[in-house]
Image (cartoon, rainbow, N blue to C red; front, side):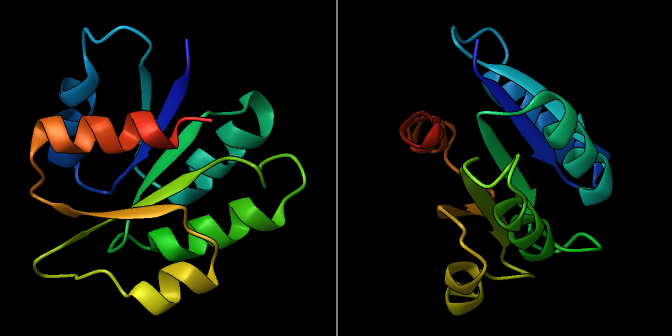
Length: 120
């Protein structure tokens, strides 16, 4: 079963991401409140996709750059989540190697399809 790492400093948003994929075949969501914890998990256990919040500290862009620069995690697709308060910086996302972006709040069905397209 493909593993998604959901990384957000908001416990509510982590729960929303878990519930978004709960019960769907082919999804196992593991959530983290920091990029450091997610990075350590990805290095030790791998992942099929990382969904990272753009506004956490350190931010999702930093996590993406660290993942992409690491030989063990460089091939993991990364989707960066922005919001109305922290919009996506498309140039920055591209420069750190993000595979995709999305905005919160998201349409659940559209977001699920976007994630399905990004699973490695």
